[in-house]
Length: 549
Image (cartoon, rainbow, N blue to C red; front, side):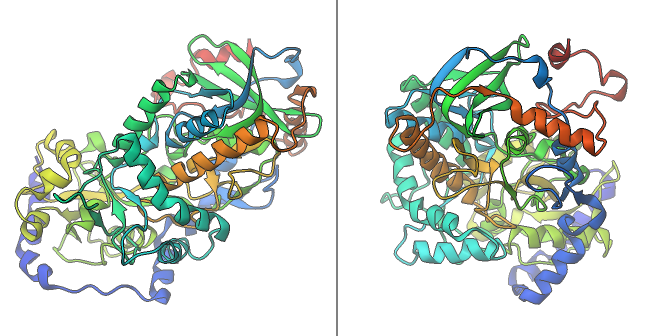
């Protein structure tokens, strides 16, 4: 499969393998790591960001792609929509059908609340399903939540919100037990002991996996539970704005049926945003590992309602996205590949970084190798990457390890004629995770009364960089916590204002801010789906145009 132009580099990789197997690559010192990040990580490119001009985070910096969404008008004209009677009434409205939203729905319903889950695509069309490597939990004798806590804080640059990290690590063992009860088939030894491996930046082997389709297996079981418990679901339905009452409390959402363009008013006593990440914004032009609906729409509608955001100046670029073949560029090469022995090797056959440094560090090292040192491998399309020496896994861990441990990854490449048991695979960083998001407390509450957040849309848990395996953990920890807390509010266990007039007053005020600073009226958000159509077809009539008819 590899063209002749790449074969010479593969030859060098094969020639240096025996030497590299005995080579020790030390961890970078904190000073060297910081220097590497400042020089090569995309977050430090000054011209890639600007200050936000409106809203709760006014004056703070974020990538242009996010700023364009925040500095934009609603898809609807709030002056033309008069809300007299809701079309839908529920106790808890959950926006998002991935792991966080489904976990929240199960908990809220179990607490006795009436639940409605709306999702932009289908249930389980989410980054959760695409997650591969594993889920962290300190449940071994040589480990503890305290050690897990230190790893999470260190990985996030010690910028994480401590209460959120505490909740994450303390709930982790219970989450594994809950998943087992639901039927998740974790990798185990013949005696039933959980198998665990290292992730980048971890000091203990606490990564629980289901081969290399952990997220898919978790989502399979949670989705089954959602269906079995008959949770009410509306698919192909987007929340395009939140509703608020006279006191600024969140009171539900304005929904868009994406099949027929119909607008629906959903009134709720508590609302949970679980809309996931933002990979389909392609920040700085990076490819992405994210699913088709990851467009930051939850952040936009919450921000307009007054939600405070945190860490919106940092994106996680997973160090190992596919760089070749072109058909799957940007798709994920799980960190588990490196955890079980694959080495990162440049075009000259040299290792240049310890493979299990934190993700931001490894990504920066790969970019340095390609951009500054000019030791990347050039593809026929002119792109660049470095090798992952995957045949080394078979040598170190024994024949058959890849097929056993990485079956999905093997199929991903063999479909294009690349046998990763015998040939290396080419990799380059891909936009993977939204480190920032809506600031929450340990119950999943935002600063807006009645509005909860869980999953990748939430901010503060991971600081400036997330460790492998903590995303599948956080969606479940905070999904369940938000589900319980929102149900308590909805059932009147805590003060809850009822029967107040609801509407879109906050959108009118937000539009006035935009007008005051001269934002062009044609710029609108949220961006519900990415538009990959060629330029001549962009702007043609779509279901969104019906909103402005």
